[in-house]
Each structure stands twice: as C-alpha cells, then as structure tokens.
Image (cartoon, rainbow, N blue to C red):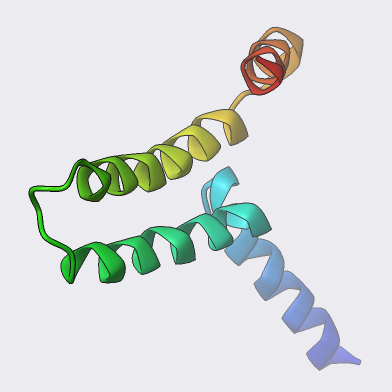
Length: 86
C-alpha cells in the first residue's frame, strides 16, 4: 500500500515538473513525425522544395501544439480554437 502511495506522489511530482505540451499524446506523435521527417529528408536531394517544406511543417506542428497547450483562460483558448477551425 505504501509503495502505491509513493508511486502516486512520484508521478504527481514528475507531472508537475513537465511542460503542459509534454503531457499531450498528440505532442509525442508530432515528435515522432518530426524525427521521421528528418530521416526521410536526409536521404533526399536538398534542391527539392519538399525537403525544406516538410522539415519546417513538422517543426511548426510542435511549436503550435506547445503554444496552444500553454494557453490558460477563455481568451487564450478561444484564440487557439479559432486558429484551429480556420
């Protein structure tokens, strides 16, 4: 029983020490995509625009998720949803 309580406290402390976007499952998937995009583009000829575009787009996903995750309160959330909807 005591071990379960210790684990719960440890998990709570670790969660409090992470950034909000690091707790999102979609952020982990976006990190995987960015890493995979780097692998793909490493083998491609750099003269093609798709290399630069894929690299910048995958990084942009990460930045946008991080920015959206840190929005607190109604005005910030409304702005994020407005951008998401288009």
